[in-house]
Length: 105
Image (cartoon, rainbow, N blue to C red; front, side, top):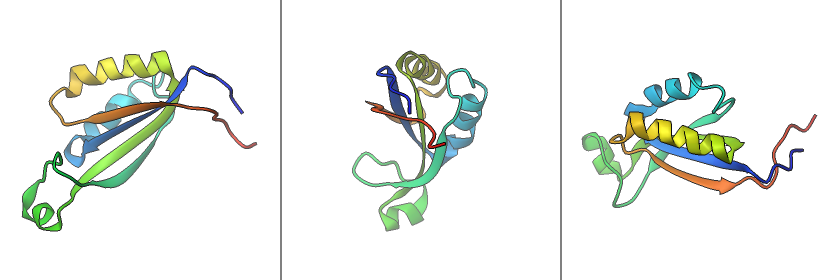
């Protein structure tokens, strides 16, 4: 188990139309994002941008969420890079401390 106090969990949430480009950007920078998970999620609320009538009727929008545990400096560098490439793409992020991470084996 790692006890790096500098590690954070970086979460990125984006509309599905941005997912492939953002995924490719992460894969192009294995030094900053050596591993991550992605998951289909749904957005709810007043700030959610609906695409098409079906999402309006259902009241939720299709989004993708990507999460990774990385050192804080790498997360900051990655966010700077993503801001340059996806500044108008409605990508939301949050970062929280990672108390511990590692493999069980």
